[in-house]
Image 1 (tube, rainbow, N blue to C red):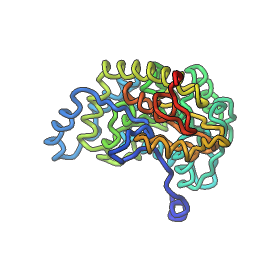
Image 2 (spheres, rainbow, N blue to C red; image 1 turned 60 degrees about the vertical axis):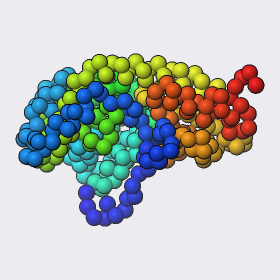
Image 3 (cartoon, one colour; image 1 turned 90 degrees about the horizontal axis):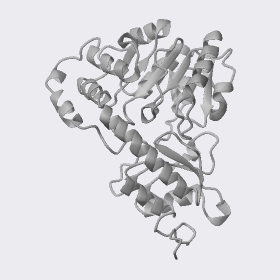
Image 4 (cartoon, rainbow, N blue to C red; image 1 turned 45 degrees about the horizontal axis):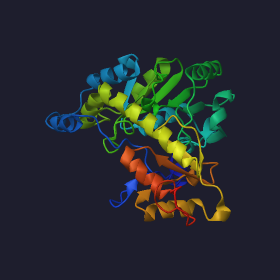
Length: 354
């Protein structure tokens, strides 16, 4: 990273609304938090009057149990994005290329550019078929944001093997892996896994996450990590959350059930991408009927709901993304998007009996 690289880049847009009058479906965070998390945060106050333990062994052990890896392979970070930045910074030098999926999380390309590298984009649904040869880094988001597409374990392992053969490190962003029953790729040779605790545990402001890597990758990440880089409250609440197996199980079941229900209702009016994540990507389409993305976003907002304008993702020009929340809240979203009991954006009603 250098001055010119940083000055040449703008911030990337993200979801999330801070308007208290809006029900926020633009961010993909769990509306529920684990039991006891507030107490765990408060209980960390006294310990926070000293520097965090170095290394933070309790957090590493909890993370290792959570993703089934060796505690020594866990590198605590202040959020998943910090893990992504660390991996990109170690792999990419000026003039290098990095194999990136699109549409996907825009911060991958931004981090590559900050290091003076160039993104080499490939379709997200075909990224595991891409050739990693001659790239400084390959990235996979599993499940992918914003499409919700996931990849089978065997396919990921085969791609990881091809990356190893090409001497190309593989970064797997598992920010939404916790919402699925599929195992993590944590601990695989030549792979850096980035995990965020923001999404599943509904704590975006705590800024807790970690990377997992072995061999030289793991050693480099650990040695490059700043001391005390994660606060005592973040470490304490993160460790507490990762041990809440009942909460994780219940969240997965709710998201799976509600996502299916929402997708079926929304498919009556929009194109719905099959998803294994806590969100759905909708193709608004039919601009000639006044159903532009701007119109859908504005109409939803007028009805008290914030949805994510997904045209900011590379390759998407007629899409919005909506989170999966609690059942009653999801009903409000469906009505706001014209598939519930509220009026639709073209003046029709969402009630088939009218």
